[in-house]
Image 1 (spheres, one colour):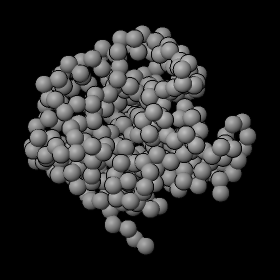
Image 2 (cartoon, one colour):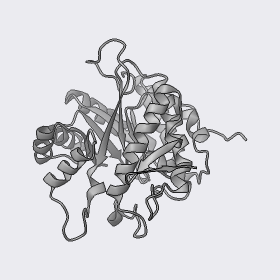
Image 3 (cartoon, one colour):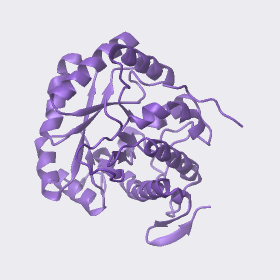
Image 4 (tube, one colour):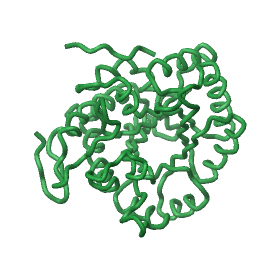
Length: 317
């Protein structure tokens, strides 16, 4: 398997590239329930907000609008039925995806079953010309660090390769009730992080897999400030092994109200995702230049506002 984010068309010595794709579920109920935007309007809003693309369960309709606007696409498959893998992956390719994120199995999927499914999934993805990644997610075969490590070891024994993941660290953080700083508990996963290309940057803490980015007055919350150093550490770790022109696919994963990720007292998920896009970009610039730009000063709603012992890691892949 190529290194995370490997880009075969990149010139020799090209700098790694950040691509931000918003999950379209963030726009569910936008601008308000009962008057939700059409898919066309949502995709136009994504383009106007400065994102590079979308992440979703794709269809030819997604492909049509994204092609017109020059937006990239990341597909999604959620399945615990191996017989449907090829059809679901092919649907995402028809929607214009070259990369597909997969939420695989359930909380009680055994390591042996998960390995069989992953082997089939990766083989069929390669046959279709797709880069497939398995997401770290609750109620899936990767829902805990221990289940993930068991699958990673089994996959390496079977193939000699590092399993390609989509990292959503919020789920493991909640499972382990983490307190900030969060990075020391993930540092032992450096090889798996460096081998990945897809990252869901959902701000979290140890009891909530999604915390609000802003408060009701448009200021960054203390909880998201606790999260920002983690994001910078992860980016620096990934960049330290990134080949020339590698692409990090970053999703500001702000889940919607209807799924229970967002709460009625929080700002709309779409508003938060747009602020998170800027924070992700600043963390990226800071990681590239060696400065922690993410915890400096940020622009919110047109004004400038200031932000004001050893921990065991989950394990080494």
